[in-house]
Length: 206
Image 1 (cartoon, rainbow, N blue to C red):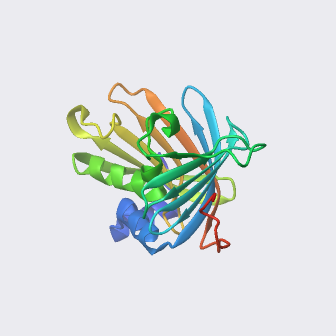
Image 2 (cartoon, one colour):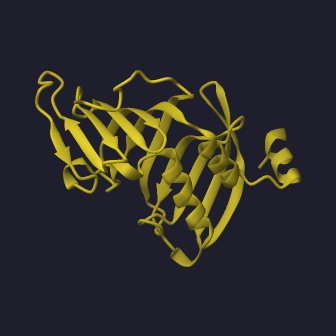
């Protein structure tokens, strides 16, 4: 397999893509991204994040028009399930099964940092390799594989394949596999914007 100059430079300098990605996330205050997740169904969500963990999800598929916000200070989720009925809202615990993803992810562990920390934890019980580089749309990415040794899993995942942006190491795409090699989830992160300014009240539905 022929590796690009980008991969060679990483190998020569001994750079750690996962740690670099985590450091990039730690420097972030805000970001917005469109998540396209594929499991047994497709989910498309416009996702907004603000430290220390405020989250706003605008659903496009399924449940088009639904909006969910999470307040990390109150540890409370507010869900407006119907776009046409703005007065109807539900207050929920982030662990509520009503709002867990098809893979069982909770809202408070849905950000980029949680994905990277899971990959880091898995690597601690296995290893990491740089699989190459690849263009995703207009952005060049580094392809990294993290695998748990002896079938070790983190939340049912034995192997992550991550496409990290070559400029900032933030994930642009992620695939998660179980110990038998079955694809559990694929997430494409489109239109990632770092540092957006959100209007007052953006993370509230009250």
